[in-house]
Length: 445
Image 1: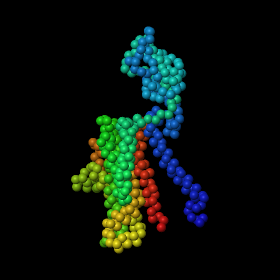
Image 2: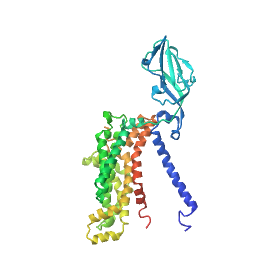
Image 3: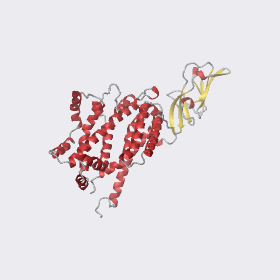
Image 4: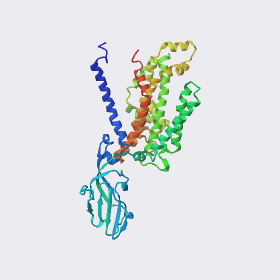
């Protein structure tokens, strides 16, 4: 027994430490991206995400209230207020130093008065209260600029998501999801007497259908929530990516499942050559086939669009799907299939009622891989989708554009990046048990 892998204490510890390292390697940047998506730009520039729960010192550029808020006190014109509240900041912050010039942002301590010449005299307290007074009436539309060094409490906001997806899109999505879950529960109650596959799938289908209907009905799919188009169009790109990914995952699985069954259990001339051809197609580079396939699409009239990118992903994913599913199906117990044939079952009945349910772990494993590959794809989408109008832009392409237009706005980039990985995370965690079963299938016999 001492020679069995995993039974030695040293080897067991090495395996555990390797798994822990891999988990931390994945968890650290993912959690960082998630936390950063809720932080403000000032907080991100001041400290790392692991300090997000603690107070931190920041240099802020704030303004006093506009001159139209001034009041007259005797011979003086006075503007009062709190420098944090007037700039929509957290009022519990504490100022350690402040200034009136970008070249000297800490010239004054709290309670001291700065003489700004013709612009008056400014006094700022530690809690942010200020008094700006002048002998003559204040003019202009904007308040005076003030540089403060302050210790601010932790602050989290949904404004980043409002900028990326649209106003209140996150809240609306959560509300729609609750409605979908409730509708699915109602459907489950209605079909509780049935025990077939329809009964188990009906709640999911009903809930997802209601969610999609609400999303399209309230304009979330086009990024036109409340009648306004978001600047970054990430909502539109999000649903464009879903439109590409879901059919590009379902179509190759359906075709590959039929093909795998035929190559595994049906006898016909040339079957060995077809299996060899599938294996040979596994090593064809994707870049080699892009241009010929695009010319074929243009030649037969498909052109650039969703249909073209669905067919392209289907073609590129089919060899691996057929190979994996065929190897899984050929390992199913022969006795079950032969008994079904003796009882008079056709190949279609054997496939749909016996092989397909038994192959669900393998189907789920490939579905996860195909979904992740298609979701994160940029090359195929750039080649087979029309992008000039922006109506079919996928998220990977939109994030690349954000790097150019929003290169300095880390809070926007972090939010966009987390939105792009949110769906793959949900898919992975929802189906990870099937992934493990599919990967381990056939390893122990």
